Length: 341
Image 1 (cartoon, one colour):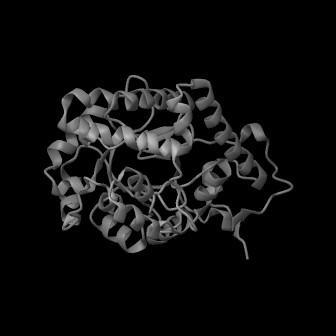
Image 2: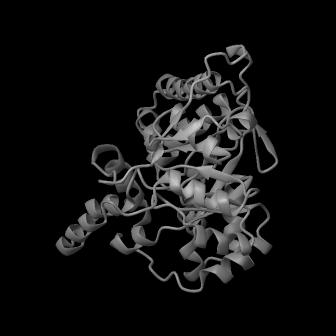
């Protein structure tokens, strides 16, 4: 059933309209104030970034998407190879299937294709109420040879998923215990609805070591699951949640206001390098791209995927040059991102 669900997720994400409606990332509310005299050579603009103690060539992440099927394996191979070549980090899709069925582990094993970049393993936080614990999470890390583990928080996806796991009770204490027993840094991510300040505060107090806000404005997993549902009432109910979530920009600001130090990933509806530049200027450390890269990865068109990633990097570099930011630290400290009136 898990394999069937993951195959359907890929198909629906590629071919159906699964973006939220009447809600956006909020990034369009900000613009950069150009610097006409940047006193900087374009060739000297440096995209090097640090994340979880690892130096990266770029401040980019391929966000968690898939795994657990042969199709997903090929997608992950393409993404991992491109990430290695361009110097991006990569997040894997939910690894529950690999932990439960050893024969599916290979679909997440990307270290040979990506020996030098951060790889983030991924397990649903709710699985801590369904038999998963430190042993299973360490197993996911070992399968992926991962540098970190992210626990995804996907309440409404599970509610609308026909076979969803919906017991999210008493998870915080289990996350806190898990952090003490897992061999790598443990973070949390949403899946397109954003993380609010109060939730982030509780998670940071529990010891979470990084946060991916995964805000609204991109893929709505309520809509993805509604396409899978055969329940007419549930499909209709999904329409009430078309504008559900916290815009990515708002979520970044809320978490960063709470903590100046927590490593922060901005994902959720980013379309290009200028979006990425805005998220970094708002306080993120990495910018994550997901479904926008999926088509090229599915088509096994390495050149198209690499070209898309190169374009995103160029857009970021051009935006930095345009405001006189020579490196990522200067971009994060800029006063040239202004909110539109």
